[in-house]
Image (cartoon, rainbow, N blue to C red; front, side, top):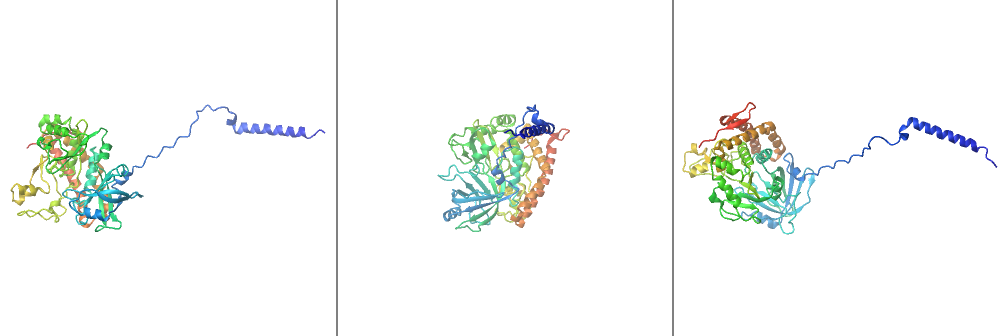
Length: 492
């Protein structure tokens, strides 16, 4: 039997399809437009987030981290002895910027020479060094790539600002220098030393192999440091091919290169004067960085360094070609704190009564081959002086190479140009305002004396800026833009 409704159904279906095609073509033309003439745009790949630099979060002076240390009984006994300078067992963890590290086994020792103290001395707090690769089985252990950390107790810096801002100045002037942060130290565990909460410390980047690898592209041959104060680069003081002598010790590189040939070449250049001295320095020292280091030394008033009267805290690194770069260290004696005049001064000599002052400024010379420093009376007394009016400002010769630089016009000109550069940096950065911000950050950890000393340090900076501007005018000529063109050599 034939279905008479089938033609009608097919007819209606045909009309429906035709109408659908028409509507699609009118309202959705791209369906029939064929291949697009536009180049297909792939979905962009999301940029990976940069890796978090955990060390920069630890060495961040805008925040205060927390350090926790556990000591077994034997370690407490050893750290409370003046005679022990070896690493002893401890457990270490740190909380910084909302992150807490895993507790790990480390080595700890008390650091310092004139500032060395005992663990249980809570008045003259000890500084510490933590070592992560400290014993067999821990050779590869680090904290985010660092093998050690230094914790300074501010023994010679009541303001708690000196090292943070002096190292900041060196780094800003492209002189390799450690990074710093603030932390509190708390001893925990079953056995505790006296006063487990030790308060505020500076956490300081150690000048270790990782530090030099971060700052130099070439291979380190040696890293030297001085063994005593009043060192200089006299050829007679270099000594034989030994790792340690009276004046200098090799901190790194002795095993691979057991000689002092690089140091001998430096001493040979340092023995010359004038043009010969300046020319001979070029192949053995990064001259520009050395002179810039001296400029920052003088801007910050850092007298406890090679360019100062004590010729101390001398750290210098050579590459495989024997070319040295000098590195700042031990900058707590900066920014004009006069420790030898305050009531807690430790040194007394018969016949000389120290003036009892607090929070008084001290300024070293910035344009002379000699300077006084807060302990000048010690040298004056040794020299036979007993006139107190002359002892306090007794002038002492500075590092030999710095003297020779000031006495040779091309070197003196470069020095004053760099001194102008760091001085202008301090103005642009408004260094006093930054220090004020740091004081507010750490204020709850400071006593009344420390707060007053922080204020003195903050106020010292604009005075120093003015002094340096005056010294530049005394010694140099300027172009129309106010930049130094030439400077005279120092006399004496």
